[in-house]
Length: 225
Image (cartoon, rainbow, N blue to C red; front, side):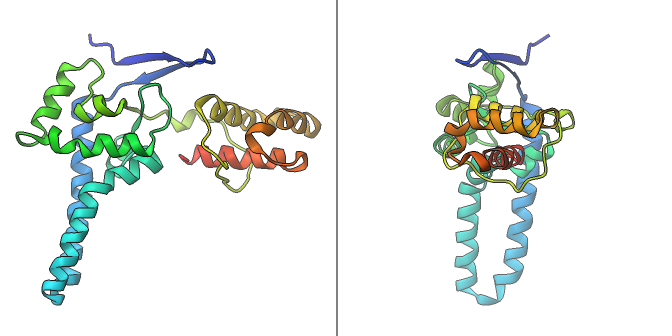
């Protein structure tokens, strides 16, 4: 049996388990995304057809933007395209950290090479030969496609408006914020304030706002950042 679970230990000693996604489920996600884009093209053709050459130009521009940047934007901001979301997949860096814009751009620009000689020929061959099911874009960008964590196992967070951190948080900081919020129901107000104060380097918020700020960060991270 092929072992599709990879273990990675962060510098902080935290072990991450990355369940790898194989070619079949990734192909299903790609087909869903293709259907979504095709539906957009069909609707756009119907709307802009009456504009003649101008409408054709608009449609061609839309095709260019969607074919090149649809996966880049979704994966960099949400971790997955709609197709991957449906299939329960997530794109991340090799070490399990969230995908960066540069890595997302590189892995998707190389889809052109993966697509050769036709219908993802090189990409499919690469995923079958690589133990981590990486296509050429993943190898170049240092990324991997895994199954997303089950959200049903997530503990509830305090009600607070989602708030993006003022700077990108590394993996250990994300875990510290999320763990604090998940365990907050067991803290007294004084204890929660005391612990939140210890995370001031992350929140950069005054003491009286540190707790609410951390809850807001946790909500933002839970929503996928």
